[in-house]
Image 1 (cartoon, rainbow, N blue to C red):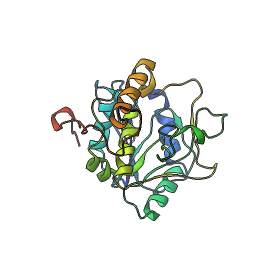
Image 2 (image 1 turned 90 degrees about the vertical axis):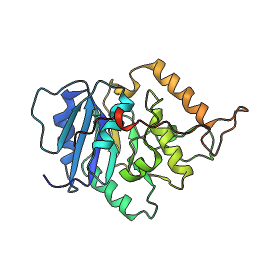
Image 3 (image 1 turned 135 degrees about the vertical axis):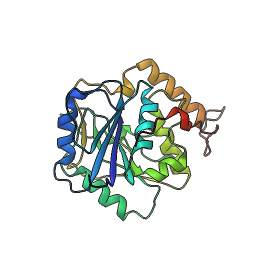
Amino acid sequence: MQKPIVSVIASAIKTQYWAEFYAMLCAKNSIPFEIVFVGDVRPNFNLPENFIYIYNEASPIQCYETACRNAKGEFVWTLPDDLIIQPGTLDILYQYIKRLWNEKAILSPRYSGSTDSPAMDNLFCFDIDYRFPPIVVNMFMRKKVWQELGGFDKRFITLYAELDLQLRAWWDGGHPFIIPGEQYVIKERNQTTHRLTDSVLHLVESRGFLDSLWKNSDGSYSRNRLEAVQPFTDDEIPIIR
């Protein structure tokens, strides 16, 4: 197998979409890639050589961290298994990140909440506070930057772990970059939920925890994280590759 440049990673359990997901990543892309999916639902079919599945019953956040630490690519892309990816998206992300001078940049295509809705550009911000940059929805970044930042804080339950990591990258000199135009918009399948957002209660709890890390007691936002990151330890993450 050719050494991957990009590792597509996720906490993934919706095996019914995996064949189509793989085909979409292959469409009009030339960058060598691999998929590293981690979760507790085994596929009942054979996977291509560059499609790695790791069985793990841990939390979605821990599964993401497991996928990243087992990834072989220089770049990682957090991409749930039930999204619709446009042809050529992988190549255009790679082309942009190689042209940006900032090695801590985090990129993403634009994002739509359904197959028949426009991109939801106005919704993706940390809060209604213009001191903060836009949020990218599916992080495309250098793996070494993920590692230097400490990865996901293991106290998170859901997707706000990604936003916390983005804020850490930004205050450390990085910046977000969203691929312009309509051609590469990633779309959510209609009436579907990601593993990270299946529980509304978990979503509310994680947002509260995120705010506790970045909000001062008077409600203002801090330029510095108010608590140190608690990364997963080596013995919590299985390395099989």
